[in-house]
Image 1: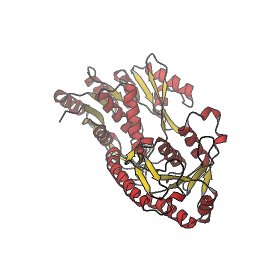
Image 2: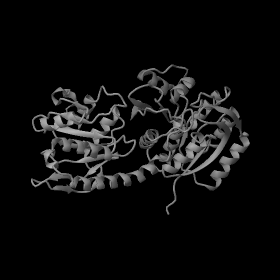
Image 3: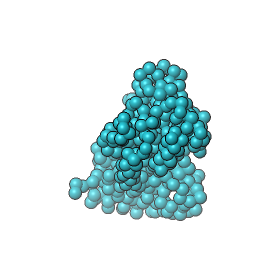
Length: 452
């Protein structure tokens, strides 16, 4: 097997497993690199609190780094919690002649609020900044090191300017602390205007170790030879997926799910098999011709925690219903097979997270009455109300329409369908939505029985 790139993490140990060395090594492995470590301190902590910290001697921290690097070719490194001024200055001395990119995550405070950097270490930490190829403070850390309050875009620019003046080649100020639809990280590189790198915000309480995870993922990308922006983008995507698939671990803030990419690959096989089986059931449905649209019918199913269109599978050719009622399935289940249906589901999930699958059917008065008689909740959008600036193509119209239709829904709402009356060149359609394929089959059965 071809050797993996090697990433060294220099940080503290988290006994709860969600941050620090533990988070770093999980992330590095999932990003396709080999992780080595030098531990600066050990902590007694869980999801709620840090009940104790014991720093290692600076000489022993240095011995770890020197021993690892004397034998293993390091392709990139990152630092996390360095704890004390003597440790920071020792690490800086050992890394002074490094030949690999270094990501410095100036960890100061744990998610639980416990301080992880001694008061006398703040100034020493700034002495390490000139070694950094990338510095990754969050907003509170950036405020601490710059002495300014960060509230708006101009504040980010000013903070980046100040931090770049302290010596790092680039600065990424993480914007996760702000309450906004998108989480925006601002990247500043010497000689360039700062650029925003946005990700869809994930609303969850499991954000313990997010900074460690992001910096370790960036270091892994750099170790693989990616340029800085690409490494950050890939790291953001990894963290976003890990947050979407996170789970509660204890009574406090849990960690991201670092194993998410591996688990998702397993789930992809399940999704494709479930869709294939659903297709066989569709072929046996009686009177399907009655609800089949003039355009091709298709069914789409999303992965759990889907947030991107490539997380949604559909039949590559969809369904045709012949005049004699025979259902003809074209193609096989495939991720990314239907961009329109994928974007509809992703847009719907942003408003109603329980929506995981969908099928498109004909819209007429009899079908609408059947659905109403079955007690189904229908939401509507009117293509004529779409803002002109948004009208780029059909997929953008559908994204806008679904968001508009579901705009006033509560997250725990049960929405059975999104409908639109069409327009010139666009057939009126009902898009039945459900939490899973069993639920979707149940809804189809109710509609067909009512029509019969």
